[in-house]
Amino acid sequence: MTAEQDEQEAGPVPVGKLTGPVMREVAKTSAEQVGACIRPLAVRRIDRETGATTVVPIPCGATRASVCGPCADRARRLRMWQAQQGWHLDTEPETPTEEPTVRQRALLGERADLEQDHADALEAGEMARVLDVEAAIEQTDEMLRAEGVRGADSRARGEDKPKRRARSTKRRQDVPDLPRFPVRATTTGRVFEAPNGRTYRPSTFVTLTLPSYGPVRAQDGAPKDPTRYDYRRAARDAIHLGELFDRFVQNLRRAVGWNVQYFAAVEPQRRGAPHLHAAIRGTIPRKLIRQVVAATYHQVWWPNHDQPLYTEDHAPLWDETRGPACYVDPDTGTPLPSWEAALDAVDDDPDAAPAHVIEFGTQVDIQGVLSGTEKSDKAIRYLTKYLTKSLGETAEPETPAAAAHMNRLVEALRWEPCSESCPNWLLHGVTPENPKPGMVPGQCRAKAHKREHLGYGGRRCLVSRKWSGKTLTEHRGERRDHVLKVLGAVGATTEHVTDDGDLARYDWQLIGPRDRDQPDRLQLLLRSIAQRRRWRDQYDQAKTDISSATRDQGEAA
Image 1 (cartoon, helix red, strand yellow):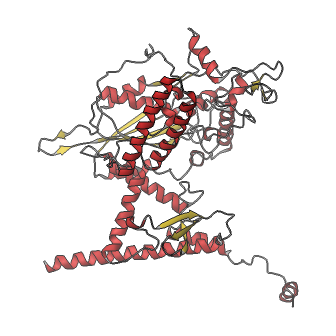
Image 2 (cartoon, helix red, strand yellow; image 1 turned 90 degrees about the vertical axis):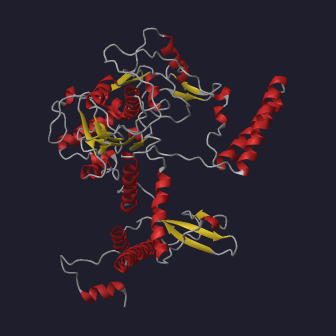
């Protein structure tokens, strides 16, 4: 009997009868419950000694909950750990540098000999030999970088350095002056002593916002009068927020006289404008922070781009008949000035003004925080609360007016130049940096133009170099080592963990979607769930055994 006959024999399905759940959806829900990656990657582990191959599911490592919730939550918790480790340090963080290996020293010696050969060839005018030596230098630098040597970059050679443009460092007359002290190498704040002899080393939590672009409604952030809301300024401020924060940190360090360290997160306000929450190590007078905020600004020295010279339908064209190929006026065929030529024109104009000036708003929140308090833990949770969401997801409009406001902001961002290489420069009669055919104004693929980023194209987490003395990868390794230590204390083992001594024994290869041995996605997800549950059970049992052993030792003593 066919399936159709079976269905006719059974009769029609009653209205409202529930159908069974889909296997893949059940597996996805189960993965989220146990904290397993919902879209694991398949990796091939090859044992060089035996030739055995094992397919291992590994987490995708996504940082957005919309992509993979469990991986995003792990990334957020790692950021919480990083913020906690560096905020209230009472000693200077150490950044140890590894001793150079024999291989690194040998490559460096070879690099030094090549540099001497390059200088000799230049002095003798042997240009063919110069080119050969430069190619050898390039290869040696690549090997040095592969060995983990920082700063090995052939592009830093003198003839390849970009032109440095001198700008006036004279401060504007409409901003307050700041005290300037030599910045000492210390990164920890002041210590205060109470009458009872107890010492305190408080830290600071600061929230910085951008200025107003027009009155908005408190309930949804939509403008009271959209026609008077300055969308152009809002878009440009969002694009250049990262540069403004860098300038704020520089001014703050010079004003206090020590190397201020920070852990900051960028979040959107209800109106769609980004703002910053920053945990700062050490305490700084509130009055001084407000002075620094009021005196901080960033000038964008780009060609003026207030009024476009072309339209989307009548934009410059790519002309390959010229040597070299370039963008030209669609009517006259005249080449557009290059990016460097446009900047030269700005430099040569004595009356030139910056294309945009960005400043912080007057709304500044400053709080003192002590280590080990509930306020400190709450601040860290608040600092990392929305890291699993994009800016656009966090500022999701709740009313039709707010949705229309977001649409207008995104449309304004669509046409603003976001960088030196943005195609939108073509509308203003300037060739973008590093031009190529197919550049279309209004279709730049940079993050700043996408709705989910709301103009801010930088990193969501901004962490200073000496925050904790460790990189995020090193913090991740610490947490991994802690788990393995707990498991090892009771003799538990975890599959697919390679000892440091066996690094040379195994090869790891990512299995692509077109590889013949690509495993079934559902099977891979189920294996990831089983693996996560097994690890969690082992870890929980290990902690229970350690607690029991510690309690027994205490009772025996």
